[in-house]
Length: 82
Image (tube, rainbow, N blue to C red; front, side):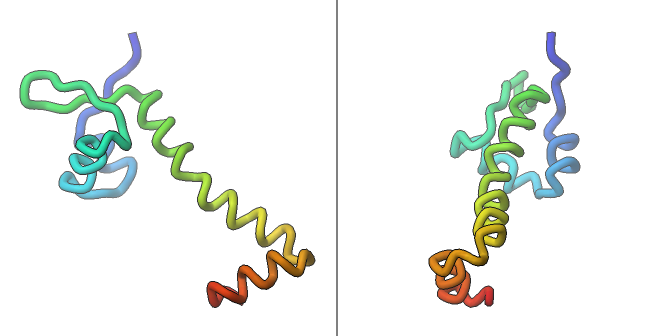
């Protein structure tokens, strides 16, 4: 059986408020298990949430790596990064 994390442990790990974490649960962005009135989270589900939300940074890194590509440079200029 996988270790389960409490609401507080996940809040501390992600550095977010209780309200934000409950909103993520309600929207289906992160899976949870209800135990009575409490929430529990599988470590694997928390890791999946983290990995899923890293993609934005990875896309930004790819644009920076392709900086010699004029299209990427124009995209950065368009968003005011360069």
